[in-house]
Structures are given as C-alpha cells and as structure tokens.
Image (cartoon, rainbow, N blue to C red; front, top):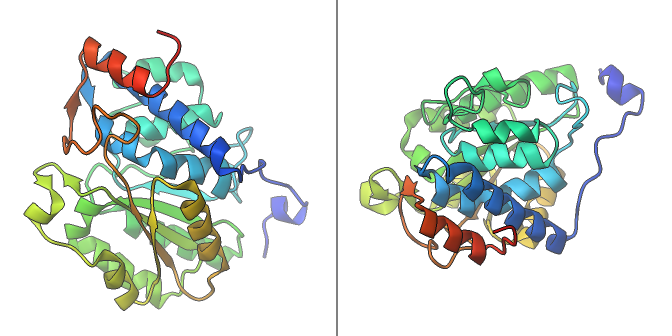
Length: 288
C-alpha cells in the first residue's frame, strides 16, 4: 500500500534539470568544501572535489526530498558508503537546506555532529553510519527490500568508492540485490582511482568494473561523473529499468575544478593558506 503522504498527493521538492544550473551548484559546493576543510588544515579534499557533480545531480535533480521534513517516509534514501568523504556530503546537505548551514563551521570539532565519518548523530539525513568501508551497499539492499515490501515509491541511492570494491561484502550484497530484483536501488560507483595506498590499480586491479556488475545481473551504465548531462541521462535510465537494480559507474577526476589539484592522488591532502587561496580563486570565489 502507498504511504499516507503519497495517497494524499504530497509532492516532493522541485528538481533542477538544467545542466548549467547544476554546474553552478557544483562549483558552489566545491568552494564550500574548501572553506570547510581549510580551518582544519587537511582533509578529504580531492575526493570531494571530484564527486561534487555527483552530489549536485543527486540532491538537486534526481532524488525526491522535502527539506521541510527530512524524515518524510516517502523520501528517497541516500547511503554514503565512503563515509569519510563527508565534507562534500555536508556541504550538499547545507546547500539543499537539509541541515542548518551554521553547523558547517563546526566540521570535525569536538562535540560537533559533523564528524569526519558521517554519523547518525546528525539526524534523519544520515541513513546509517558506515565507518567500515564496504558496508553501505548491504544496508542499502535491506532498505530497498523493505521499501518494496511496503509499496513505497521511494528509491535508494548509494555511493560506493572504487577502493571498496575490494571488500567481499560488496559482492554478497550485489548478488542479493539482483536476486530480489531491486529496481528501486541505484548504485553509483565513484570511479576516481584513488585509495589510501595510492592508485587503485597498484593495490588491486578491478577493471572492467561495469562488466562485473552486469555479470551479476545488474543494469549497468558507464558515464562521465563530472558531466551533468550524462549523469541525468543515467539516472533517468535507472528509474526506467524494471526488474533489475542499476549500477552507474561514474568516472570522476580527483581535485576537479582546481588546476592546482586536478589528478593529484592524495587521499588526505594538506590545505595551507596559500593553497586554499589559490584553489578558491580557481573555483571562482569572489569573497577573498
């Protein structure tokens, strides 16, 4: 049975479908990320800059959300399996109006709900805590199963880092999702080729990533994760797919938007004052 909200004709917040507008939002998120991490002096900058377009497309175009009611039962769920990539996530939540923007100033400070790894202490906008890599997809499969049984129109989106593919739990969840025909589940693999030890290929080769998920019975799409038109097309195809979960393999560039940082495979990068000012200038910041 549909939920009472759906039965009453409740409408989610409007979506943005213009790639140029989404690009502008992505750049704002990148600037917010730098300003959030700079006071700490170092953090997960490269991953966040690379994934900004993914988050902008998801939160401002694709997902059904209600900023006035983050716990809306028919909201789409989002799982950040790479929970340490929290900076760009928090910046997105604040920009979307899902958390108080003032909280950003407390990022990673003692007692703040904005921890380095996303925590449910922040409230219903965090669907689960995933400090151990590789767990997010398993939880997302459970959510998708439960929502299907309830007859909810909600979908489940999960971002998985490419280094996480090395975890066996990921493939157990992949098998289960195909078996239960979870067409309300959309996985985005953030393929940026970086993990703690360096380039993913030097740790453990994983290509062809898309063909692996296809072999497990998933509808699979390869796209440029820094191109909003390709992302919106991929999400539309995912929503139109029946009987199969979808895996979007999104190739992203670490440090995207800053010529100084683009392509540098630094898992945790330092931000001194000079670097911060240069990167913000490259990202079009006019507040300096």
